[in-house]
Length: 441
Image 1 (tube, rainbow, N blue to C red):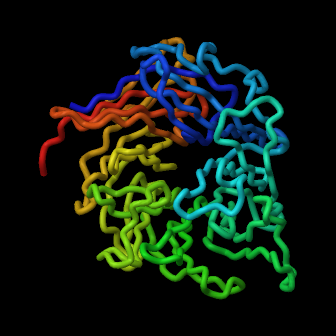
Image 2 (image 1 turned 60 degrees about the vertical axis):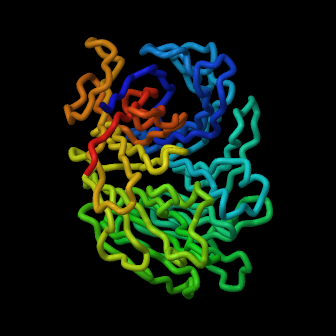
């Protein structure tokens, strides 16, 4: 049977809005995988309406199994400490981190900075390149502004690094496109039509726009942009159209606001895999040529996949987190189509999408966590349930990441690790997920 086990808890210095696996490597002690996690902190202070935060690298290694609170940053204590206590902590002046993005390996990079870094989307309307390798004190962080809030109509919410430009979305519904400069930066928005590096700003959604990603088309150098927002629309934009008069080439409407988009394709293994991470895209002569798919999540808790050629109705969908929305969806590397959803007030869920021909998938494996910092004690994992979290802090899981997928045995379908962050409790938790044999359809 499916099983989730809580293995360790790490206390964080501030609310964590985004995390990503920077790199994974074998543990020399032979106890399992060791990973470097990049964390993005973000806190909105109502007094004065200010935002603060920072970026950090956390080294998480396996400690031989079992639950507990040890096992963070090598021999460091489980409490990650106050901001500035970590040698790699980089505080941000005037903003926090809202999202973290790994540039697509298959689409190429226009600079050395991009190829070796993670893109941090920051609430001061700046984008920062953070090194994949664990940072040292005084690490130089390349940053650039994409436009002030007065120009864009709101805070920066998402960014997608393209081969020749970076696309951004903002609160208020605007989107922008900025050509790269040789040093891996761009310049501010400009209204000068004669400027050779002119940026383009357009209204993509009627309300807040939350996400943007590049959608590569199989067998073609052409790509689309996909955006989603609070108006419930999932839009595709063709960059070949006139940039001063952009209109969505296709759009569809979900039952609630769109929170994230991920370009996917049917892999040779038969499952849905992210196009950004997988080089096994169908060739130009295959049946899937000139097509790609988009996976979208929403405040309605659904996960749905749309064909860019027939965009009105999803080809597959699943109610994932029934009590709340799905904020982000991350693929489990090397799993052939297993995903982890960050379900906000519903905790997290494992979604098995290894059958790309199915109109839906097996029921998600949900797991939640209660606050460790309560009188009730440590809390723990809840399997296949939708209980409300208890404790002083309301549950809010904005992001999750997975690593260490182990090949299936005769009886089991595989195992891997999931890391989740609880925004208000300021905790990071690592879970071991074991997928048991599932009944055939």
